[in-house]
Length: 116
Ligand code: SF4
Ligand code: SF4
Image 1 (cartoon, rainbow, N blue to C red):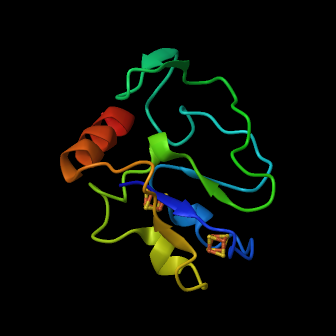
Image 2: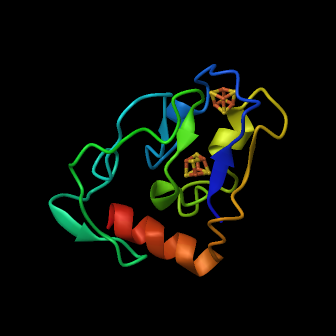
Image 3: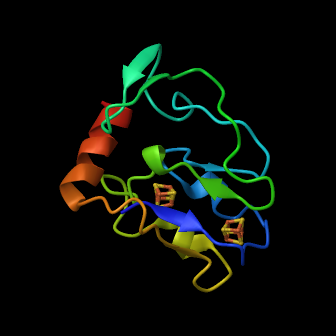
C-alpha cells in the first residue's frame, strides 16, 4: 500500500529528496503527476481517473509534508525498503495508508506506469 505522513511530522524535509517518484511535497506546495515521472499531457491513472499530468494540484496538507498516493510505489522497483521511512528521524511518523491498500503487483504496475 502507499504510505502517508502523520501529524507527528516535524517538517524536517529529510524524506523529500529520497523519494524516487517525487511523491513527497512540502506543506502547502502544489504538485503534479508529471514531476519526477515520464508522464505528460492527459493521462489515465491506474484507478481510472483522467488527469492532466502537468496541471498543478492543490496541496494535500498545509501543515505537514505529504505523500501523493498515486505517485507512491512503496519504493518498489527502486529500493528494498521505503526510503522516506528509512530517512525519517521520527519513529512511526510515516505509516502504511489503509485508504490505499495496494498489492505488490499494483505497486509494480504503478512504478512501470510512472517511469515506463
Ligand atoms: S515509500 Fe518510497 S515511493 Fe512512497 S513516498 Fe516514500 S520514498 Fe516515495
Ligand atoms: S522525514 Fe519525517 S519528520 Fe521529516 S519531513 Fe519527512 S515525514 Fe516529516
